[in-house]
Amino acid sequence: MRGTAELGPERRRSPADPGIGGVDDVLIEVLVRLPRKTLLRCKLVCRRWRHLISGPLFVAEYSRRHARLHSSGFYLQRLLLCELYPSLKFVSCDPTAEAPAGSGHRPGADASLADLIEDEHGVFIRHSCNGFLLCSSSRCPVGDRVYYICTPPTRQFLPLPDPGCRTVFAINIAFDPAKSLYRLVCVADSELSERHRQILVCSSHFGRWRESGKPFLVSDELLFDRGAYWSGGLHWIGRGRSALRFRVEDEVLMEMAMPPIREGWSERKLGYFGESGGHLYLVEIYGSSTTAFDVMEMARDYSGWFMKYHVDLEAVARDLVRSLQRIIDMVAAYAFSVLHIVHRQGGEEEECFMVLRIPSKFVLYDLKTNTAMDIGDSMPQLWSIKQEGGLFYTWEGVYQYKDALCYL
Image (cartoon, rainbow, N blue to C red; front, side, top):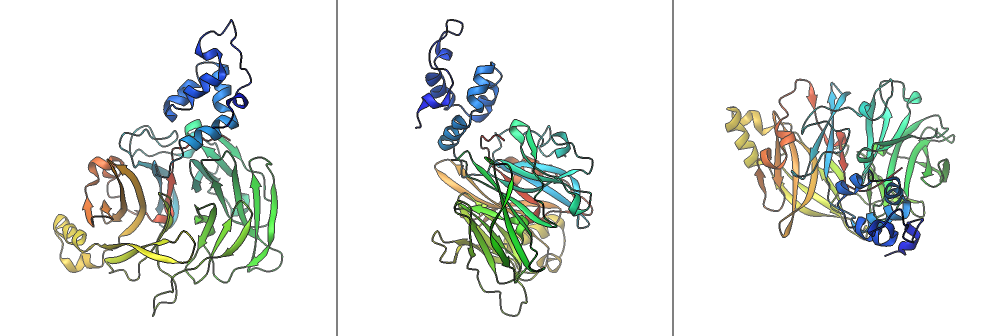
């Protein structure tokens, strides 16, 4: 552990503040062991405690001790006729966990980031990483957007400085819970050509944008707004053959290996791409009637993708037929979507399952046992969502949330 003398401005006991609270190093040893919810309440005890808990060195030590790979939950951002719909639902992966501020007052309730960030154009989530949310104003021209970074549990938010470019294609957050530094990575246009992009970086320690590396040519349009932070880097893929990863620490951009596009198809059919439980996952689903597919994982040494799980949803489809009293042919081509892959601790073993959206309902699919589970007890927020005309959910509208202690 880092020297606790650095974590507090006072080390000697004050006559006006006797007891354990008067010795900062001992107090810190107690506070650093508390769960996050209790720790945030301790900030209300007095100014001194608030100063200790909010200090960057304390936050770094607390994050190191309590670094989590497992998702606390995720935000669902809904779409209405291909347009963002101004409400969110927070879904907890832990039934005993409390939803973060700004996610509604009850499980599954409609919520708006307007409760936290006031913007006349409305606010939507654009990216998330380990407790941080990257948001922007929405119902306005792209060039007029204001971007924000926020931490819902602490109800803090900051508007980002203007990157000073003509076009912002995406801004991603890169944050390691074991460190106190976060970085913002912006993919912007370049003066070289319409097919060139320039990376800009803004550090929490500097507060201004600067160019990182030279402009690079994109042969395929990558999903820069869905960058996955894993193993110290941001990873971007698209529906073409190319993919990129950006090592945040040394700001190196390089190609990333991808599986070949299936024969007979002109583009990659992405079913899911993201980080979960310390793994980087990719799902490709070719054809609307496909009920069997593989969940692929990137090797730690980036040598390539390998099959981690095989999924067969035929039994789920048949159960759906019975529950909806429809003929099998109608459901053989049902339009399901993979929303999220979730890791969580279940007793002595780690559980891994997919959250699926199929017509009129959500399904939890256990990737280890290849069985579907009832979401009623595990995710009551999803159970409470009824059939909503015109609204649909995809993995591109899911934003993972991890219960990390982070301040702006």
